[in-house]
Length: 306
Image (cartoon, rainbow, N blue to C red; front, side):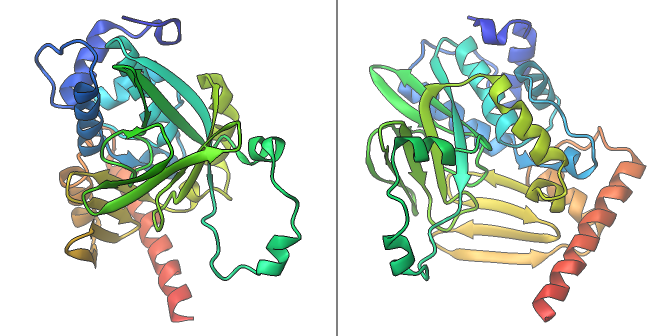
């Protein structure tokens, strides 16, 4: 099934996308079990990464383009990942809603309680304004239940979360959902790179994210432009590559990290650990990316020495 939003994406493109997820056989009717399996496969096999942004040639967020890029072995960030995943789910018969979302700063435990007490009381209008549109969130209805579905956070939930208030555990990781006044929802994942995400209940479309994508992928103020990152989630933990530092976050065993020593190791990890095919990168691309990553790493070391 192809919705109007996904017009122009061929069945062959979706089939190639499914193969990237390790799915080659026929799928059954939409079900919660299948939805969970699809999200797990997506997080394991399609990395959150910003290679193209670092090279100054950010790909657009048209879902058809993202579907073809993923089929070819690339990754992306939330607009690509959730945009393509939404299109795939709709193609498979799921009822998907896109939502304007916003990653907001984690509350500061050292904040001045007096200043907070005299700050304006938040309301629906204030909640809407704080949703910046820097994240594309998804909800999916299947089997009479609605789920928060996200393949675009990098270190988010391994499986969908029921769209109702409360805490949730997946392995050793903890999450929660709560109402955002009357306008939407707040997702929390304390300590993660996206510790708080607000999203509006109202439906959104791809065009609603274009301006923010342009800013995030081109502005020197954007974290995606300033620093390289790749993340991959699996059942036991999270692999994270930030600059030259490779980390493994395991809630049971703890976090381990090491510094990658050179471009050969960097690209071997990007391909082997994160599953990002590298055949689109010329020797000049590889040299330019490594130079940028290494320079940022040295600058980071300087800040630590200071």
